[in-house]
Amino acid sequence: MNPLARKLEHFTRLTAADKAVLDDLAALPHRTYAPHTDIVREGEPPRVMRLILSGWACHYKMLEDGRRQIVGFVLPGDLCDLNVPILRAMDHALAAITAVSLVEVSTDTLGAMTLNHPRLLRGLWWETLVREEILREWTLNLGQRDSLERTAHLLCELFVRLECVGLADGPKCPWPLTQTELADTLGISTAHTNRVLQELRTRGLIILRNRTLTIPDLKALQRVALFNPNYLHLEREVA
Amino acid sequence: MNPLARKLEHFTRLTAADKAVLDDLAALPHRTYAPHTDIVREGEPPRVMRLILSGWACHYKMLEDGRRQIVGFVLPGDLCDLNVPILRAMDHALAAITAVSLVEVSTDTLGAMTLNHPRLLRGLWWETLVREEILREWTLNLGQRDSLERTAHLLCELFVRLECVGLADGPKCPWPLTQTELADTLGISTAHTNRVLQELRTRGLIILRNRTLTIPDLKALQRVALFNPNYLHLEREVA
DNA sequence: CGTGGAATTGAAGCCCTTCAATACCTGTGG
DNA sequence: CCACAGGTATTGAAGGGCTTCAATTCCACG
Figure (cartoon, rainbow over the protein chains, first blue to last red):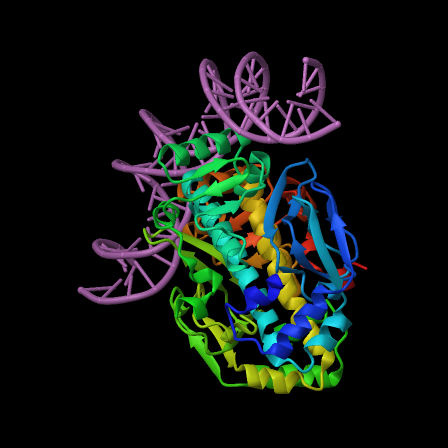
């Protein structure tokens, strides 16, 4: 199933017509990107929005001296930069982590598609609000949690988000991130990232091998991370 | 002038009718809050959006063990939580820093007010996008900048934002934040916050006294902070 | 089987924390 | 008008979490 439809179902019940619209969206011409290539660069004028169909991407920002911070992960079913064409220039870049397949959507197209589908429109708002809330949680993560908690928290978040779009397999999920990418997300050095992962392994909280993450006891990992899934607003499921 | 109108003018030119609508908005019944009190608590169902008319407020999140992170400052002219009533529960709190005066706006009211004012609607989208971008910049700030750069960056951001709504007076602006609040924003201890401020003072980059911040040479402070104002998207002014 | 990126590890050191003590400041009541 | 009180700011000393840098091992892939 269309990963966006799957995700929105966590928030609201979609009609068959709603789903048909989302399928039309996913049927637009696909674009593909090789791993570790830029999809959009900082400073470019934003032309379109993008719906990720498969693969992992990330938003990142850089300082003049080369320091890099990943400011968000974009997974299948995620819609990047809703309404961002309002702005003159992108102030963050979008890069493929794995091979990525996506469709480009113009503001007009999306407007026409949601015109008679208020539930979809609300769903897109929900998506935007959740993305913003994830950023707030990341701020909390970087500002207050130590490196072990912080790393555990990121693992929890990505696992739950993958589960939402059907990309987890029991306690397992794909894990394409290198330790360098992880370090650029967590605001710590690669050396320390490595040591933190060792610690999580030693404690039996994760198994990370062959680009696959296994979390034997999600609750335990969440406890270490002080992870509370409320900020992802999956209420319909929880309720 | 209405601080929201003043801010939106940085993005687009408003018609007299647009401004009249914003004045109607600001003429709704005011609510006031004492300094250091909560306006909304985490977990509450969000009822309304809020437009700040005067005073400073902040969004914050807490960990179970009491660690607190401020995740955003809300200044006069800022509209909090656009469309957030879509969600079931607030996942961050809103607190007054100084005495705050605001108006509450329901989704319906705002919808009716912007119905025949597409430019206003675009303006509100712009506001939302800028707020999200500020969060990304904070993520970069916490993840990559050291404590001196980070502190300098926050001072630059708040000064520029205050200037946008006419609350700066030449190189001066009000500065109601305690060092504890600054520390909770910057993710460093209060002791270190104090030392960093001393360092900025010693270097002649700031004068901070009597709850007033003076930045004798904004360009110099921006250089220390690696501050690039692009993320605030004040293009119309810059162009 | 060789090659280059990715992961791992060690040692030395610094940035920032912690904790505690002291000074300052602002408003309030005597 | 002063003294007191409580929050806020400042400072010192000791220590720890994380960085830096370099060396080494691992591993996927051509």
